[in-house]
Amino acid sequence: MDISRRAALHPCVAHRGFSGMAPENTLAAFRLAMSQPYVQWIELDVHLSRDDVPVVIHDSTLKRTTNAQGLVKDYTAEELGRLDAGGWFHPSFSSEGIPTLDEVLALTSGTCRLNVELKGEYADRELLARQTVEVIRSRHLEQDTVITSFEPDILQAVRRYSPTLKTGLIIDDRPSDLVEKIKFIGASYLSIGFQHLNERLLERTAISAIDVMAWTVNSVSDLRRLSRRPEPFQLCTNYPDRWLAVMKEENPSHE
Image 1 (tube, rainbow, N blue to C red):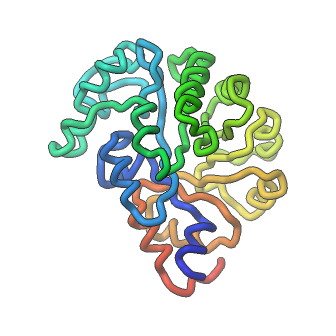
Image 2 (image 1 turned 135 degrees about the vertical axis):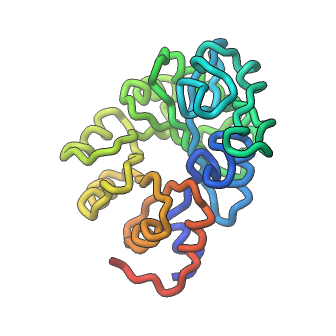
């Protein structure tokens, strides 16, 4: 199987951008991901700022990835954009701020599709869903975006504001009724910790037309093992370069 067919069977999703080589959820990480061959998807995280703007950061607090303290929701989008959100990774990235979702959409439009995770902590979930949908719709990118969340009520709110946006449940488990839960909330995408993938789950999701993304697969051995599976699913990784190296390997055998 050539690299194009293997890449189509197990597409790469760059987790928070190319976060193994640049600070997560920054424009630098997204640009680097977009520069990698065959990368067609980027995963990112969204909270609301104090002025109700969807901004791209994983944590609800600023301490881990910026030079500030406190909650994301206590700062305006403009203030968040002026923070140092990259110096923690390497001083050369100290000019990276927290981007808005709209900035990321402008950057990636026409090049990469987005998996947008909506975070539930401290959130007005209805407002978070509405504001996110409005930004995506304003850029006419509903067909190039999937909205995911650990929180079913956020996904159901997204569905109320957009009947066309694809939604997906995130889970780090494999309950026996998982497929039924996904269908009940009107979703058609599953984002699951890669350790929970098995043949039966992939068979059931395929029957129900549920697309699957396995996260977060960073070791070459795990990437190799999963890429040898015959079922189609996305591989989410901090290291698109490792994914590409595995895709280039010759004569993979199915396990």
